Image (cartoon, rainbow, N blue to C red; front, side, top):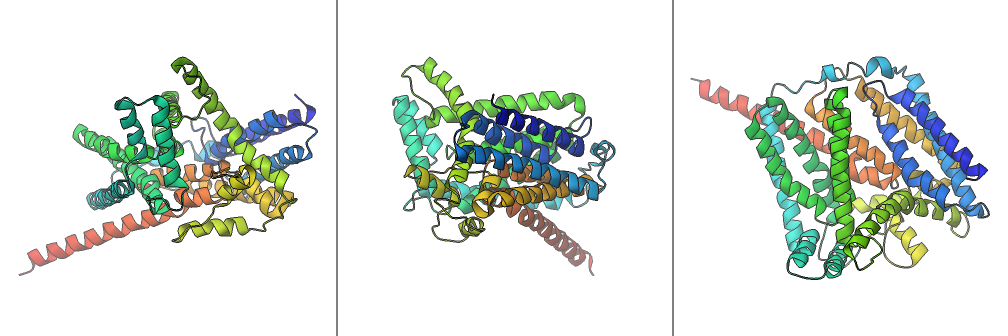
Amino acid sequence: MSLGNQICAALGILCLVVLVHCTTARGFRFSPALLFFILYILQQIVGCMLLLREDDPGAVRARFGLELGMIGFTLGVVAITVCMRFSPSRELQALRSRIRLDETGLREKVIVMTVGYAIAITIVMVYFLRGGGIPLLEGIRALASGDEVRTAQILLKERRMEMTYFEDSSYRGQGYVDQLRMIVLPYVLACLFLWARHSGRRGLQIAVGLLAVPAVISLMGTGQRHPVLSFLLSLTILGYVMTSPHLHRKVLGVFFAIGFSIFFALSFMLGRYAHTNSIGGDLSMVALGLWNRIAYSNALGTMALFDLFPNPEPFRWGTTWTNDLYGFLPGPYVAFSAWLFRRLYGFTGTAAPMSFGEMYANFGLPGVLFGSALVGFAMQGAYVLWARKKIYRAEDLVVFAIGSMGFARLAMGGLLGPIQYGFVGLPLLYFTVRMGQWALRALHFRARALTTSP
C-alpha cells in the first residue's frame, strides 16, 4: 500500500472512531451519521484506494477530495455535538423507555393509513399493468416457460431499461410512482407492523404480512436492487431501535442474510456478472459482481468527476442540483448522473457520484470541505433533536428509520437521492396522516352530537 493510501486509511479509521464516540452509546451503536460514513468508506474510499494510480494527477486529486470530505463531515458532526451539548452515553440509554405505541385516536390513524395504502398500491399496480407488466415477473415467467436463462435476463434488462431511461417508454410517471412504492408503502407497512406487534394479536400480524406482499412485489418488480434493500435496511434500523441490546446481533444477522439473498438473486436475474456458461461459474461471478458494485461502481463515477472538472468541463456552480429539481416537474429531463454516464461512456445509463463528488463538480475542493461539513452538521443536528423527544410514537420511529436511509443515499448518489426518497415525501406523508386523523375524529364527534341531540 502506498504512503498516500496509508494516510487515507488512517484518516478514515480516526474519523470513524470520532463518529462512534460522538453519535452512539453502549447498547445503541447506530446513528445516521455512522451509517452514512460506513457506506461512504465502502462505496468511495475503498474503491478509490484500489483503483488509484499514484502517477495519475486526477486520481490523486480525487483521493484528496474524498479525504477532505471525511474531514469536513466529521468536523460538522463534532461541531453540532458540542454546540447542542449532546451526550450520547446519557441521552441514548433511556431512549427505548420513551417508546409509546398506545395512543388516543389510534383507530382513526389506522383507518387513514389503511385507506392510503389501498389507494397507493392500486395506483402502483395500474402503473405497471398499463405500462406493460412487472419486469421481474416477466423475467420469471420466461424462465418458467422454458426459455434460456440468458434470454430471460435480457428480457428483464430491456424492460427495466425501458422503464428507467427511455423517453418514449410506455411507463409514464415513474418518479411519482416511486414516491408511493418507496416512501408511502414502507411508511404505512412499518407503522401497521409496529401496532400489530404491540397488540400481540396474531390475526393482525398475519394481515399486515399479507399487505406486505404486493408492496414487496412493487419494490422488486422493476428489477432494481436498491428499493427493496433500502426497505430492508429501514426495517433493520427500526428493529435495532425497538429491540433490547442482547437481540441486536440476531436482528442484524437476519436482515443481512435476507438482504444479501435478494441482492444476489436480483443480480443473477439482471445478468449483472461475467457469464461463464455454467451455473456454478455464473454464481461465483455474481458474488464477484456484487463486490464490484459495492466497491467500484460509485467510486468510478466520483473519480471521473475529479478528472473531468474543471478541465475540460467547467465547474457548474450549483446548477447540477437545480437541474435535478426538474425531476419533480412533468416532462423529460436529464439528471446529472445520466449526463455523467453518457459523457463518460457514450450511451444511456447512470454513474452516480456521491454528494461530495457532486460538490466538487460545482464548487471545487473548497466546496467539498464546506459542503461536507454542512452535511455532517445537518445530519447530526436532526439526530440530536430526534434523540431528545420525550415520547416516541410509531410514526416517529418509522420516520427516523426511513429518514436515516434518506441521509444514507447521500453516500450513494447526489443531493437528488435524499430529496426523492424521503426528504419531500416523509414530511408530507406525516402531516397528511395527522390531518386525516383529525378529520375522522371531527366527523366522529359530529355524528355523536347529532345522535345524542333531542
